[in-house]
Image (tube, rainbow, N blue to C red):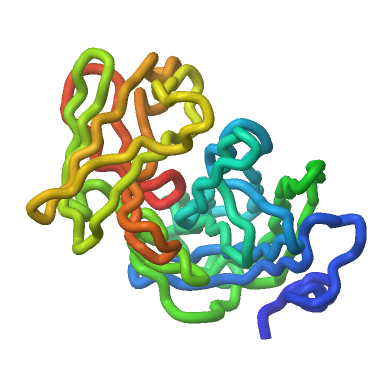
Length: 289
């Protein structure tokens, strides 16, 4: 039994207080990866007719935040988002989730004087103790911000092992983003557009959705949620028209998700292109490096 607060265990897909409104149930749990990493999973089940959000929420809404407090020698990454639904409703674009899903945060050991000595921490093999605080926006005709918390004396793994770095895994039936390098996806940047190419992996449709980056503007017509590509000879090609690249040089110039096929469990690939000359960065999805 994981060492979670009694309240959080009781909420695991049972009745949720009315204060959380748009979220029917939630739970925090720890999972392991094949690379020996830990991953904190926040499972969220929206109420019927409600939805929660991807990294880029679309035309409205807000992406979640998860803050993990860990002992010395441990570090939490950014949120890893599973493949979202792509929806246009009443002329507004939505990237998010309308059914039970998981947000994941990879937790790794980091080199510190204390971490180098296994006797310097209570449990050198797992985060101990830990706390997590999440803010998750849920929307229907209106939006509410749920604040979800949990803590424990030590992380205890549940569920099946995930792939190293979470690249290409599956969480509750939704694919997790693969790196461009692992998926064999490449991009070519030219003035006004980016061409993305790679293996179609047996799928006959492909789309691209942009990440939420300051200054990044993909030239999509109003109420069009994704850039559609073509598939021929077992490979795909997507031409992404750009109005502008990202303005923060500490972050990618352009990034987003390639969606192969149309099902939640079909593969998706995270593409990140740095500022300056050079090929597409074979980067991991945020948090999965």
